[in-house]
Structures are given as C-alpha cells and as structure tokens.
Image (tube, rainbow, N blue to C red; front, side, top):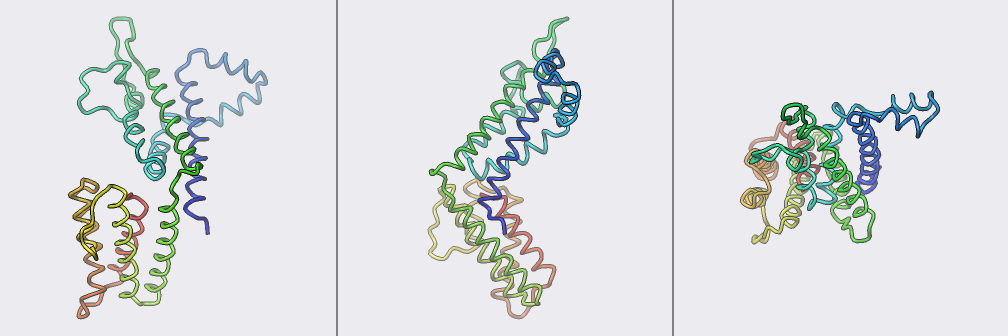
Length: 268
C-alpha cells in the first residue's frame, strides 16, 4: 500500500511539473513573439509541433491544478495557503483594477482595463501571480523533503486509513456496531489533532466528538455546515456505542465511514 508520505511526495512533484507546463502555456497565450522564441529554442519543426500539442490549455486546466495545489499546500505548508489563495481570488474590498490588484481569476474571466486606445492592465499582470504560486509550491516541496518537516500527521493518517479499512471489513461482515465504534475513535483522534494544530485548548480529560467539534467551531476552524456534518457523524457513533435498543442501519454506517474518511482527508 502506498503511504501518505509517498502519496504527498508524488502529488507535489506532479503538480510542480504540471505547473511549469501551465507556465509555458500561459506564456504562449500572452506573448506575441512566442512563436518566434520557440523556433529559436526548437528549430526542428516536428519536435516543435509535438511540444506545442503537448501543452495544456491554461484557461481549461488551471482550476483543476489550483484546487489540487491548495489541498497539498494545506497539508504540507498551511501557513502559505492564504498567500497562495490571494494570488488567485479577487479581493472582496477591491475598489480599483490595476496591475497590483489584478489576480488570476481576472485573467480567467478575460478582464482588462483600457483608456482610449491604451491598455492599462490586462492578462499579462497575472503572469507574476502564477509565478509566485509556483514558488510557493516549490517551497512546499522543499519543506516536505527537509528534516524540519513533521511527518507525524502523515504517519497518523496511514494509521487512520488502516483503522477505517478494519471498520469497513467489520461492516461488510455485519458487525455494524463494532464498525461504528472504530470509526468513532478515528474521528475523535483526528479532531483532537486538528485542535492541537490550531492551538485550541482541550480542557476535558476524555473529550467527546461533540465537545471537540464545538471547540473547532468556536475557534473558527470549521463553519456551521462542517460542524453540522461532524455532529451528524457523532450522533451515529453514539448510536453504535450507547443506544442498545436501536440498531444502526447499513446506510448509517456507510455514512459514518465515508464521512470520517472525508474529514481525515480534508480537515487539518
């Protein structure tokens, strides 16, 4: 089985390779003398045509790359995620569109500013934003590979995956309560780790899912929809652990296992 450590390393390298290809595609889209430049670098026509056909379409491919890059940066270099997002998203309080406030989302929507026949700002302004995003991704890779990177959470994620696989096996053999109990323990451990990641104090000796969930909501780590989703999972777990009069259904156990798997992969 591929470990989370190896998975993140592979994902990072693939995203950086794809990012560099997107950079070339963006240059092709923005630079008027691109065709002449590529002829100098690749004088062979056949090689040049093959290379050009292999480049992605920036406008169609960027969003997927951005979403995947955000997920990796959130795990490996969370402190830089706001910077990464800022280079893409339009500021909510933006009053003017100029070279300093132009972002990649503006490029994707074809926005530009002209005065008469003169272009004040256009898609070229986003090129530096994308370069900065690539730099942040490269920094995430260096952080990942350095001895300073704390791999404890990635190792813990492997353990959680293993425990959830055990829970699914129990569910497949109709041991629904046992499957729910195992999944509940995984959820509790993960929520406790998320609290630790964000410096949220845990004052109870044996904190419940509900307590940890409330702490994360009060600390601004999860929003109301996330809080409700986790609370729903906690209710199913309690049904497995405490209410012996009502048996959990197959659908409830499936919801619990899938929900816990999603939380451990998306909430950090």
